Image (cartoon, rainbow, N blue to C red; front, side, top):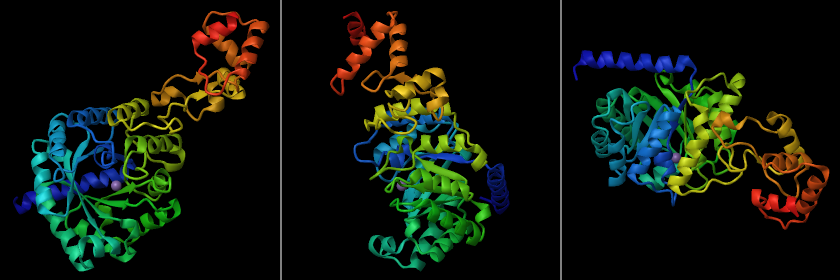
Length: 403
Ligand code: MN
């Protein structure tokens, strides 16, 4: 590449980054197909990954962590299926700080337009990773980062670098890693809480430190990546956003190793419902969320717990009489958002021991049955006698009402 062309490209790149930073938008970066798929039992075939990638594209994610080409042939195949097909989101491939990994990513992403393909480099930076995993000193780790980021920047316009185990890295060294990575050409720097141990307060301290102390940070986007080992991945992601992070990396249904990752649908709904607080826009079509959760559940085979926010089966269902009565009068009485906001199933008034008169009448009416006091009273009495766990469907309700 000629020096002039390089300089022009650098300027364009900087203008794009500045534009993103100024826009105040939160870019949602999905890693369901890479970090999510690393979860034991969640393995996806390449054609299934393409299906999910299409759904993520439709939902409006900004970038998509498409796989780790150096790790398996199946990852390469999946990326090859996405190249040229997935046009909205940027496709990124994960790489260690090895030239051979970057070459593998370059080959896998060949054919994807330059502004829609990138690499995501990672290297352990914490004392634990340096000593036990890499056997390298701080200086050696820095050299590795600089060399590989520079190598990647020769081949990709979009280069992300993440210091693995950032949350257990000495703050001064962490800042140095970011500074050098940006100077070497990183366009995004990531903050991964690899073992998921941060709290929202400590997250804010880290993100503030990075924004304040890393020279050149304004020339890159800052991405946050949280694991859920303390059940705080979403809260930490939001804390990162509050301190000015530009990108949130997350997975659908929060799938991922151990306790999983920050859940995309939860982060998006929190940002949506509290736009007054965060003052940040995102590009996700929230009506695509519940169908996306179902698709990922079906294809990965990882069952979503009934109580899972946004996508769980119980989110729009209730058996409690007082709540059922309220929901019938106005759904907003007992819901934070209506089902259509997330493309979820209709509100379901489950009949059971805790149900009240209004829900029984509602169900009898919808079946064209009598709603006189005697019938309703009879049904209510029978419901209270039913053994726990009995499913009261239309057939059973008709029987009860008739006898
Ligand atoms: Mn991770």
